Image 1 (cartoon, rainbow, N blue to C red):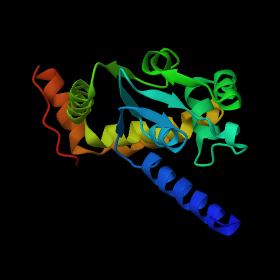
Image 2 (image 1 turned 180 degrees about the vertical axis):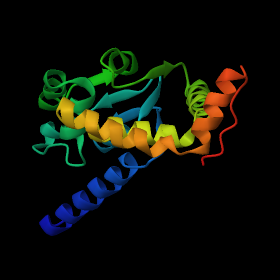
Image 3 (image 1 turned 90 degrees about the horizontal axis):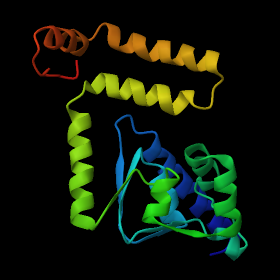
Image 4 (image 1 turned 120 degrees about the horizontal axis):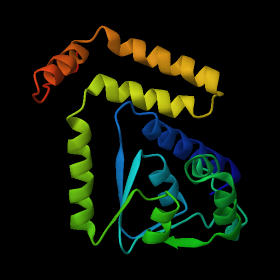
Length: 188
């Protein structure tokens, strides 16, 4: 690709990945095999990463005299901490699934793709039982509050909490709790 083509490609890739990250609903990726460079950056955009035992994670771009350009330099340190992210990006080291899980890059490690899919679906089902408006509000508070100072983060949390006060789901949740039954949320 020419230099202008590279710039346009990276811009579109970053925009696509940011769109995935900004989705209001929780997202889950399954990593089965190598997630190196862009594949790792794509997984970083999701809320949860379920990995198979044979998965490999890494951002090897510096070995090609480039840097992760689709958000890896920003998302990885926010997820695993600055020092460890610097180590992985500067060295280009690859991590096994278990190593990725030990530093918080992978949430779960399963033996194979079938079990990883079952785990991802189980996680999605568990989240799906919760109030959908509350889940969206919680994701917003976490996602956008993490980079704020505590006072501003608490103000964002308050703003997000106010989004659920007048919902039918909140009343259903409280009623179900008092009646000792499972709530039935409608997203209203």
